[in-house]
Image (tube, rainbow, N blue to C red; front, top):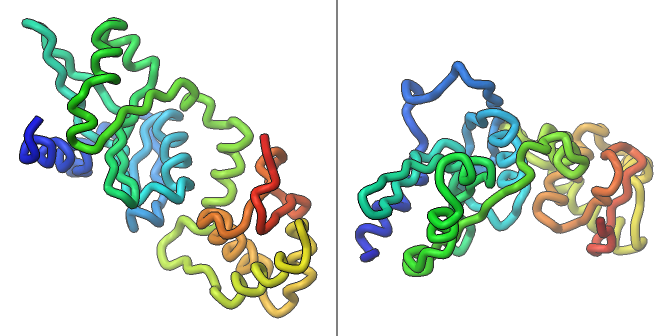
Length: 229
């Protein structure tokens, strides 16, 4: 694939459709994305789960949850393969997101493997990711991401940098601390403001949260990545 064709495909995959093209008869979530600075349309559990993953991933710069199907030709056959989404990271690497269920339903194993391993993706600095578990939207880590993102994913919400600095300074003195103790150490601000600052730091990977339990005031945070699944 030449450079012009590669750029055209990138542009096509990252273009958010006009409202008239949307399938509002399907189950849809409409969360606000900080990264995109707008409401996004996440169809079914799989779409919402992918939004949680991409919005929470600090490597991802932008994404599209509504890309047009990828057209693949094999001999005299043409396949229109639905994508779950497309994303670009801070190094401009493009990732095409599919679900295993969709690939199994639309194409046979040979076509799917050819698609995943096609050399054209290397030539356009892109790759394929096939998800097997996006239907598990209520999985513990995703439930936590959903809770955390609700503190920051709204228009005009900005984390208080003064609170962030106090949290970072507090964690320099102790290996880990629970959220409730953070509240007790920062009495000059509202608890909701503190939660927003905490989440902003967690998403930016400036501090780390124990994601092995449901997020609450008893959850532990650390300046080090000490919590493992």
